[in-house]
Length: 178
Image (tube, rainbow, N blue to C red; front, side, top):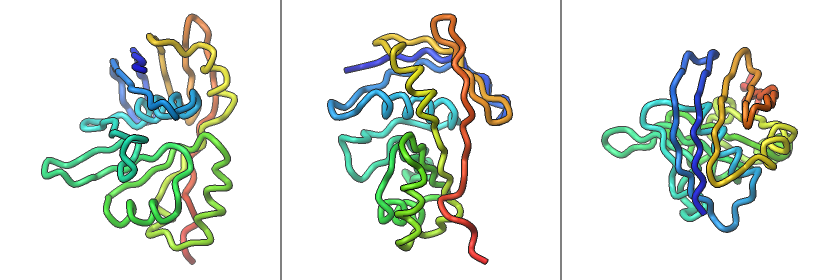
């Protein structure tokens, strides 16, 4: 299934103001919270070159990425709760790795603490609140229009005249070594 998202983005925290017109293919195994997290990640990570990968259809690709002109992956952006070895490989191969986690980021951090993850202290875990996703889910349609803003870590999504607000926090996958 294909979903269209027309997003008017005002990311004050990063100084990014743009209109996005996204066509997001939905894998049959993808649930609504995952899809919504992927779209939020795309919008709030937006920069030149950011693209959806084949994602769930291709096991060796993240949900989102930025590639350099010579094909190297510069930014590797996961959605969900990837395995520690996957994050280890990604961190060794890319300049930046981030995980947009919509279910139990604490469990991801605990799992990764037990295994070797290259530069784990530099991998950012973005905690997407379940309340935000639960409020957006009933409004999800084939064609979606959002006004999305972020200011001082607080995100507001206006859909069908209703403003939905939440704090989206980002923490390192693991604390910096002492």
